[in-house]
Image (cartoon, rainbow, N blue to C red):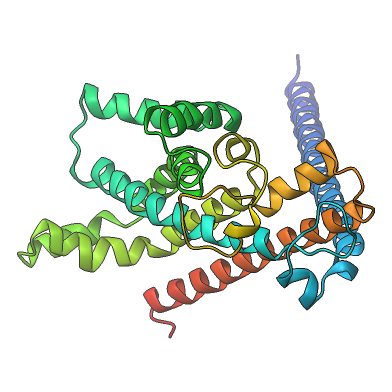
Length: 313
């Protein structure tokens, strides 16, 4: 084969390789566009569903909200009753649950991330935390009824519901708090140790303030779950509020939260109560508004703390 022929063959091979490379790049771009389109479509469908569900709940429920509706007691027979005792019970239960959940959850996260050595015990604790986070809430309700109602004799009460929700939310609180503490740069701890700071000083003055935005996120997630739970509370708190126990601070009395009230009105039904659907719609809208306010407040607080930590404020 002459030299010119060899050059032609090499040029043809080079052109073929270039065409193959160009075709591969075009296929990669096509696949990338298809993948991006699928992701955008999934996000769009999710956002549309959320807007549809939240919008419908607010459209049906917001017209029912009024000062009288938010402050008066509900009725079992007469229309026009409100959800005042249920709203009080929901917020009181939220405070009680957070009083138990936050110290235990943050304390466990601090121990696992800062002080625990990797061994069988800590591995077992981490495995239990991961496993408990997947257990259905009704199982926690059954456990709470068996332990707090039967073993400790608390009966149907707010304290039994709060303790059950504490056990339910501990895995979430521990996991999110662990992630927040884990994100604190290792150099911060090394610099603190180089200044001869003791471990508790490093923890209290450096690690926890830096991890505080993540811990606040964990508290907000826990609060939203407390407000929306029904099954554990039906088994540990009951489904009604005695007229003598309305707006009471006694944690050993039975109670009914907004979510349980909605479940009673829509699933069990209240014969003779003509505006049951309107009361349930108003309670559902109020629940959505409370969760949105908590989430917005948590996001703003986290943003301000992050800006202060970065020296932007």
